[in-house]
Length: 284
Image (tube, rainbow, N blue to C red; front, side, top):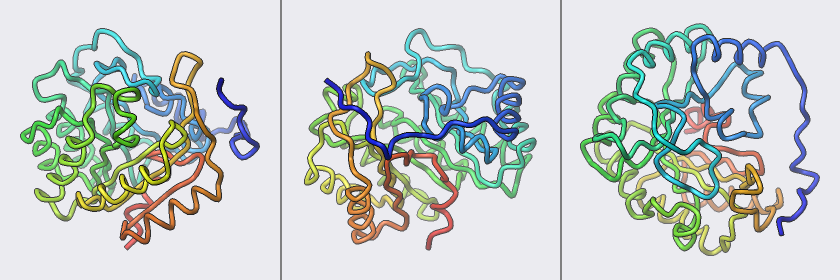
């Protein structure tokens, strides 16, 4: 049985004009966000700041991770005008930093990599001062697909390992831990200037020693920025939370990550991959 949420996980809900403006624009341009699809606890704050993480390549994922609230089923056709619509949204919102992510599309020959590249190019063309971060799937480890995203020159390439390798069969059965590490290493080899980033959820049943080993593996793969946040089950049909990690423990994880030499570490109950993402580029 899942534990009751502790006091530090209560979110104050309030409506405001900034949030309404972002929601209206996204509806107008028919742009889904991972904020909505994943039921992110930071949605209110991020929309209030006029920021959002755009979800590319439709709303149905070809994988079946036990923690994720993204839709499953037959993938939608790739929308050729999506790069233009995303670029327009960035212009209208006057974003200084924006994040692109996607569902996993194992049905596409390149996993959607060239679509990522097209969106990056469109955003940079209309918004040359905006920094671009991409949170990418593993593209089944295909080097050409990874290289296509790198060639588009985003400022940050993020790929989440999500949890410790022991839990992969139960939590993300179609992923591969070593493949994810290799992706991060390849990005850094191809483009040393691009900031590499990864993230994990805690409270899934991992042990502290296992988590710290993942931190070390990420550093060995050239990963420079790290996010660690509390897993919150989107519904009773998803994998239940096994533990609520205290703010003090998150502080210890953050300190350990900095000790290992990560350029940026964010660890806390509500930390997510894209939460206040621009801060990673501000840290030296």
